[in-house]
Image 1 (cartoon, helix red, strand yellow):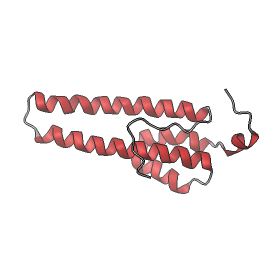
Image 2 (tube, one colour):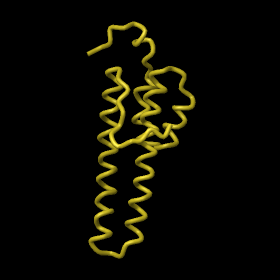
Image 3 (cartoon, rainbow, N blue to C red):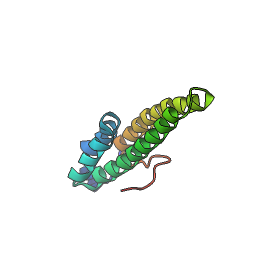
Length: 117
């Protein structure tokens, strides 16, 4: 449902909408750049949410990759391998849903993401 508040319509920007796709493609670097360069409240809020999510994904991928490489080749290393693919799939879904929510004028908070920024 479109927003009826004129001020909210003026505050919404394309950057606030596409920051989630930028985060999926460029990760932390893209969202951090948008976060530091954005001036509108809508863009900053969406960039902050996307940056927090991408930091969570980066940390989780680092941890899972470490578990995958350190463990011997057996069931213990297969579990982190599947978890890596699951996390990447969750990243695609969440970035897509956040983009849809931004198109609707909402700054959606990602699940599991701590507020680092």
